[in-house]
Length: 341
Ligand code: SAH
View (cartoon, rainbow, N blue to C red):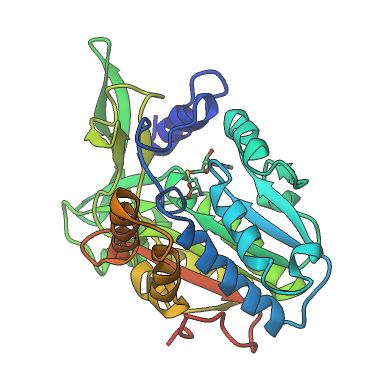
């Protein structure tokens, strides 16, 4: 089977899938995400959404939406931050796109006191202006990998050999969708595609173009994907992605060029891709960190300072993670972002 089919089964199989069966986050889990590191991440994104909401004339009601909400921590931090803006929390209907029943239950706990509505797909979101966040969602979407052979491509696959899952290669074929990649690759190079990404991003862009709103998409990756970025994490360590199917988190870098193309193709405005650390600094994370630090001492203060550094420093998450925003074309981009050059 293709790497994409393998990823889909490993992550979301109803009985054995990684996300379908567990809460994978935190020190006791397999990986930690930005909202689990510090409340400041969600607060900054919340204030960014709030400014965009004000810029767009305070639409009411609107959908405060998240795709792939994990434990619900990010949306909870956003909800707390937007309470500072009169009328915004009251106008917000919370809509969560989540595939995992285990994580839906966890999100319900985190958001007790609110009335979130869950959906299986972005297409099912209500027809309202959407103020949407996605953190480490697109990296969980299945990817296909192709190795260049001459002027053709062999797809990387996984098969069974002596009772073990083993990587292999399909036949060399000319894929029309990869024709343009013959210009920037050499034989032996690997390129990745994410078949589900264009449809999800197009749906988001079309809604923003038609109904208004903004999308903040945060993930690790870059502009114009090249090379093998498929990885498995278990207990915070890289492992062989074929060793324990359904037991490790499988991800790949997100191609922001493909995200931008789909959002723009749907008629929405798109910002330049911005490193996470730069965006958080522009949104005022240092000022917020100083305020929070005043109430802390000893180990709690040390861990707060470490969390700030982890989110923003170029040698930690600050440079590896990127952010892109989509907004109504012709309007101002959300704060902290530059328009696409
Ligand atoms: N945003 C959270 C969690 C990131 S992990 C955080 O930053 O902590 C990825 C999330 O996306 C999980 O909630 C997972 O269950 C969900 N997910 C993965 N694939 C999905 C799909 N195809 N449809 C809907 N949700 C999905």
